[in-house]
Image (cartoon, rainbow, N blue to C red; front, side):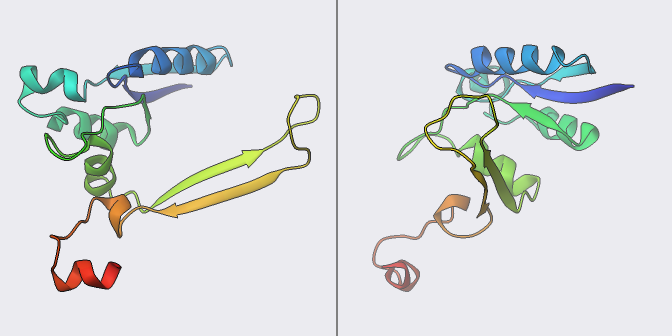
Amino acid sequence: MVYNVTLIPGDGIGPEVAEASRRVLEATGVVFKWDVAEAGADVIDKYGTPLPGSVLDSVRKNKVALKGPITTPVGSGFRSVNVALRKELDLYACVRPCKTYPGVPSLYKNIDLVVIRENTEDLYAGIEFEQGTPEAMKLI
């Protein structure tokens, strides 16, 4: 069986990290067909946006994506690609498992923890309010 996966290399160190992750996955012997989709600060001049519609189309079609790190603007510039992906694809939760394994050196032993962070509300979702508004005051 071949698994179709959208590969979003990202920018900055993203392509290097994504390529290493791709090699690890392929080392399992599972067969992947990679649909490479460009996103991030490096593609704005080419597409006029850091998140071209073709990226979202690919993820929706394949239903799975591997994404390298992508530049997040601070203060101004463009909207975070990470926030846009969470919103456009309605990614409600960020699930982060943390587990230790026997035989693998670790500072702590017997850890089996899952952190779930809700993506669609508050600052993590990119919902911010103007200073001095009632909404901003409620957050303080």
